[in-house]
Image 1 (cartoon, rainbow over the protein chains, first blue to last red):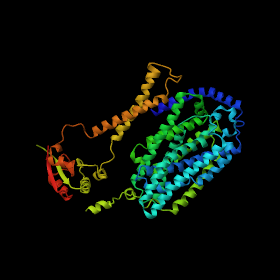
Image 2: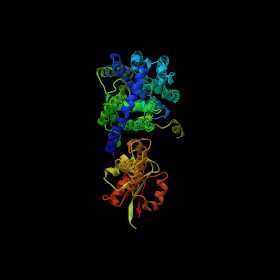
Image 3: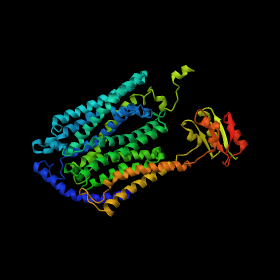
Image 4: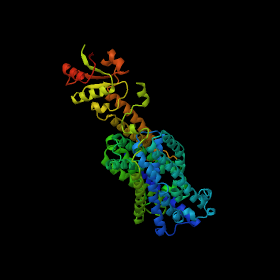
Length: 410
Length: 176
């Protein structure tokens, strides 16, 4: 059946490519008309090359930080006991959003004029930009970007400081404080993540419309974070930090979360594609048409088969979710698929002919990850490895503690 | 009247769990534990492996997906070709929502049928249901382990001794 799907997809792709040629021509003429082609094709400037490579690497790392923040919020919203062992290191990853990720964002802010084509277009000559001028102007771009980091810093640090304070005195009031942060934070999180996805990624092609765009980035982010969480839990268990709290059921639950987001991401991205495909409005289709050129088509196929079908089928049986070797390899695979997914979102604007990964991509990703790993290790080693006195810690460890009230009754 | 099995009543989940471990280690195969509520860890204590229902679910889901794709291809691209909105005669994209619904529907049918088959349901009667002590205890406050006489390792004296040493205060033979 998957093969049938693939054949039909390829057949359909060929058809779409026919449409693509005519539509791409239309878009090109339209672009040329307004005089904002990005210089001669195939010769982007060094600043542009670096800017796109850096942006892709940055959005990848941002996925991990925002995903971590989301899982911490989730823990408090659902009062979940199974997440206690993974909460502390996720709190540290979420706190990287501010100030570390803010400082790492500065190159994007500096190179914004090179990265984002809309910044050098006069809105009076571009209808799409004129219509969206309230969002797409430089003061709004820089203002909102700074505000996003403040919002993330507020939620992430609020949650972590209450959690660390509870380690010391064990007061239940800290749990209530964290719940308040989580309940308000989930709304702020949804809006701010969407803002980041729109301003930093979607605005590369400001003509594009998609109400699903923020959710697609969100689903992919939590997906890659869930499997990274699994791997980190395994790593810290083997290192000894989490050996008291990391039980088989904790790994199983992490695996289930990853599995759930495998399906959720496919559902959301398919919905975006399906609605655009079905409506066939040029203002929306041009985005996917561009991404069917050259090797980009295969990057898209990787998203369908590598991001969804393979993990979906592979993780159906329970024993695979508990196989540490298989899940460690799946972590690497998920990183690759998510990175390529972001390339698919960002790259075609600069390299319309096909995927281009070079030394700047390697250096950017390696550099940002190195900084984040350094900052994370410092924070992780400075504090207890899991919430020491959370009300649900005994339950998370699989220990039954008789409530004080029932003892009094005896 | 044939003897159906030997029934041992336990007072706490822990007692039933330890008894289950001993019965498992003694190598019995036709036996079961009846509790008023789910007891975590009991399946491991009984040595029961992962349920096979998942396979029925998977086969049901795969059938549903295939049915959806083929049905839409047959209706729109083969039996009565019709152009809608300038779209191709067949595309997995518009066939997907329906295939996906059928995947879920058939997967749930598969689960239900698989569960019934593996549990040998439906059945009209079970020998244990005639036992007053069983019916009052198993759905209220007792934890009841039953070893069938059909078990190849079953021996009226040995089995009774095993259950008594596991700590059961009440052991009785259930008639069919």
